[in-house]
Length: 158
Image (cartoon, rainbow, N blue to C red; front, side, top):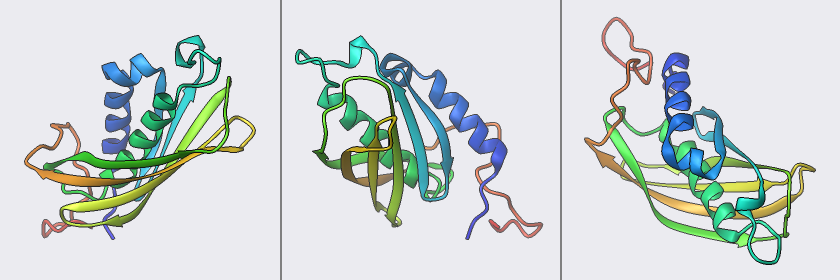
């Protein structure tokens, strides 16, 4: 199993959390590791639909983002990733508070990966669940200062 470089992970988290869309949504990538990620969003008025509950698109975005980052550490360093399918269920309305989406990679393949995410409210109650199919995009990796994985003296990923 490859050993992710903590400095690379720190750099990715910083890059993501400074990006336009996560800032627009007021969501934060809290952690990323092999096969797992955690996204948080403190709800505010801008996340609510006309009935005063969090808009389904906000929950879908959390699921999309958490599944993406749960798969990300398994793809090659020079590759990108795109979601090609998203399925979700809304399980309970929520109108305020911290939402936490935990993504988990179920299968990481060379070209296609599959992941799930559970979104919980601040009381730990499940409010949404979803799955995602993701496609690896060779040659579309991020240009980072740090390497994604540690390498041995022979140049092999360890």
